[in-house]
Image (cartoon, rainbow, N blue to C red):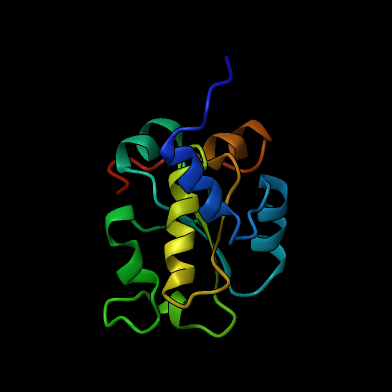
Length: 137
């Protein structure tokens, strides 16, 4: 018997078709070599505190992401207002980040993308991580 995809799998696949996802290696090169490219860590603080962080990543909790990264929002962060702003969204495993990146594209941040495999893939590739400072939010 052939198992069909769940509705969320179909939905995720459709949303991913509209964004250019980056492997951990390509994301690392982008944030180190391309001005305006930033890694945005949307993971909850419990994951950051227990698993570590990517040095230089900007933490924006998922529940406020659209307001912080939409350059037309009065609540956006300064980085989102910069010319050439290219956010790479990172969650823990690369699922929620795909949906978040597509929402940003829908809001007009056409350069938004996400990290394939999320933080765990980044860590597995041996890319820079560090322990979160105590009380890191």
